[in-house]
Image 1 (cartoon, rainbow, N blue to C red):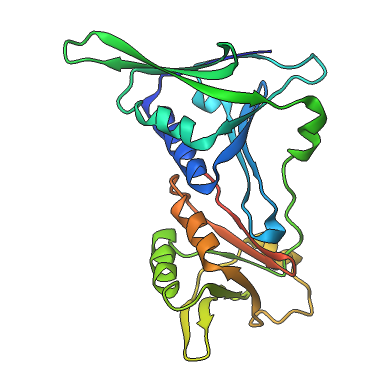
Image 2 (cartoon, helix red, strand yellow; image 1 turned 90 degrees about the vertical axis):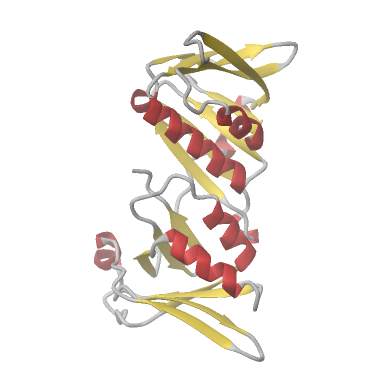
Length: 267
């Protein structure tokens, strides 16, 4: 197995850094999948128990000026690595204003993802900062558990309000209750609600809009004003909102009988 890549574009480097910071806020460990066309960061917690499941896809041609890899075999041309999310995020924090970033798979008595950052000094000469991040190579028999997740058909899908606004509201609500009710309908209306024995507080959002497919696939018997609702642990939702570092152009919430699913297209 071999892997070597390089980033020289400042915007790509900044975006890659923000993606790693987002992942570090969501989970302690993640899986990095390397294939000839893309990199994937994968989180596969059990969603039924309130965990976070994520499939983050970065096209290699959009990020890397150089990209070389050889997988396990010609038939299975991929590499799966398990790593500590914070280690990668911490290494990339030193890449601000870097001239170039190099990443390669190395073996230094144990498998490592070696990150080399070329920085400019005051004298305009360059200096190299190197981080060796320990990784665990995931055997091929376990790859089947790390596939792109499928989202069940939803009762309602709706665009979310500005995430910073939503985060601010939810942070205030957590002082009253540990659980939040999210209600949404096909008229672009969303409610964030908490209920206790002493108080009921609801924040209303209107005219958010619904994804086109949501309206087309919706049951003909469903009243557009009828609310679908889910109950969610506020701490889990805040962890998710706090982890967003990529400033998505749109965020979608899809609600179904099994729970809530959030997808954040990266601009």
